[in-house]
Length: 633
Image (tube, rainbow, N blue to C red; front, side, top):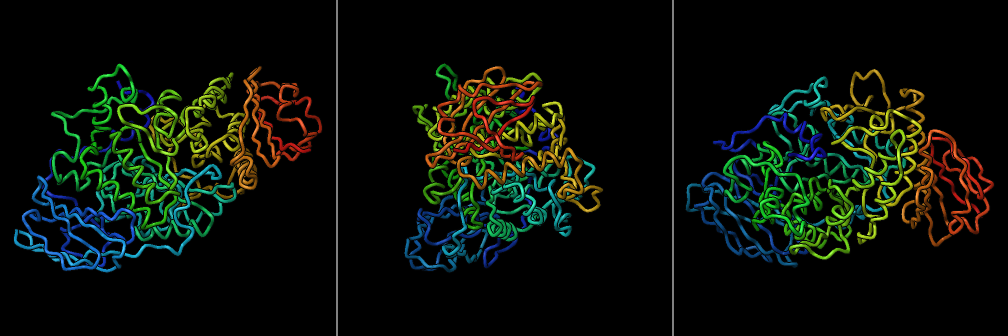
């Protein structure tokens, strides 16, 4: 039985048409990030180019060309580059080339000459110089950031010229269909940088932007069909790199969403498989059991572990065999390539626990060895704090050799807690207890906190479309520990239940030509929408200007009478008190209980309203509201 926590995602994924198990030919590939010299159109080499001066001197090239396996490689002498050898795979259309690039190698072109077999090929493979002058590259993601999470296809269309790509399997734009492309792109996101910054946002997280050339439901991006191409409906690979640079110039970081566990069934590596062991194969189609508990259950079975890690996520999402060293190297190099080429700041890793455990450790180490400052957090949609902490750096002992080196995770435990608190007759107990479990982490402030996302019902609908309670949620999101993430449109009260998931992935009103309303502007919002936006903007910009809410310590008090109080404070004497009332009626709270944090302060200012708080001995908290008080001496 599939856990209900995955049904919203699968509802959309299952609508994608299944590719045939075996295809006669590989898909056509548009080489947007092409090397300096191209070979025949049926030939490609991954990575498409590389750099000198990388910390890991080894480079594995995957050459794909009809009958290439029978060819011999002659490489012209190149100072600092050594050919270690070649390796055949099961398919005659692939050849592995292993190189070593010494630290003293210079940028240039490797002359690769394949002869003696069915394929005779000359290929100039480019080695580039690393970009060491741009100090804004690879800044990392940390608790000083405020992330805005969006789906590029549904956010804004800034370039109508890329709406229809004639070579794509899904060629139409149909905004009245939740599973078709709607036309959003890089330019659309860039055109609204100022909108994001007005809320105090510091980082943009788009859903995957790599090519997703599936015939249906390709808009979400989680079924990659070419690891080295931007999806052309967003823009070229070069335009993506420019998007990252433009974001940096605007004071915004970029988080690149990646999928390690599976690919799309129209990926050329699936249609023309290098070898059977590049994918996890089963006698018949076998789906994952979607239950990570098997990985560290002391009484668990190998079958359950194998089903979880090696079962396919869906019929159109072949499961990648990362225990194959060649596959592991291919993936590791790919994600190093994207960082070096674009200068992106962090990775969000989709379905993180589903991947091979050893591979996860090797992948994380390789990226952090090359880019120690790179931000990384993973999706670990699990049922307990301990299980969630298992997939982040933690104080737990290794299990079967696995010790996670992932800096942080998406905090689904806090999400469950805040949603419980915001519902009618809600309770703060689960939220409090979730944070109480932070002792399991090496550093819980690297976790990303959020209230909803693209795989679940929108929080505004979940809590009964209560603006007061939603504002209470915004107050928590922007003042608790960790890295806050806001799902696009929540700030303007976008709503719906994920039945199906396309309903929670609607277009942002005003992002597309012909929209009757433009909610990127105050004039286009209803009074309630403006109230919500203004609340987020006030707290978001305050958080950006006050390090105490970014890196300050947290002290929470056990909820009493359905009121939850916590403090953010630092050694510089800054203290902010947050008091949340989940009762419908106003409550008077005795401040004596909080003396260990309020001692030395005599008054305060409520951050959102600007109202003075002259008495810290007693607080009146209106029903369904939060006080965010900057304490004064």
